Length: 152
Image (cartoon, rainbow, N blue to C red; front, side, top):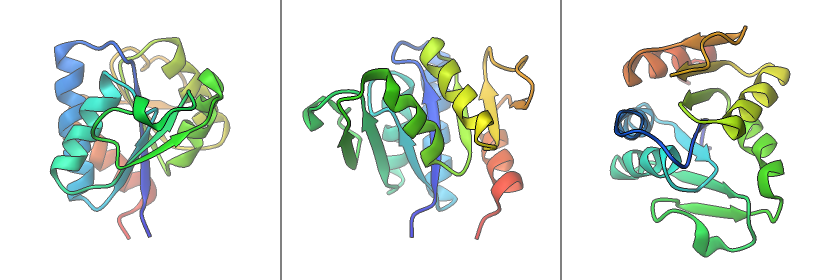
């Protein structure tokens, strides 16, 4: 059975955020996790690329109705036709949530995750939200995941 971690962040991201997401995706795959995201560009694509390069499974919960709109590193594309309403599904699909940058869509996913009692860590601007742990490196994010949900 695949253990999923949600990676959330913007479809427009800085080079630093993209590099962080790529490394995080790869480290999570190395630790035996699969990732779930919104399936788009930016942070989502970088995380999927990193995970895929390490042989991990990547799940994209897409806002539209076309599987073909998923980034090329999504192993399993799930079209929803729900637009941004699918953000709740992305947030709840993982056992923990790692946010990398992002904007209002990311903020909504953080809120949904916290509301559901999911552990949330962030790299970037969301550290002032109560219940969100700020992390500085992809390695710290994986440590957070393992601390919060275990590795079995």
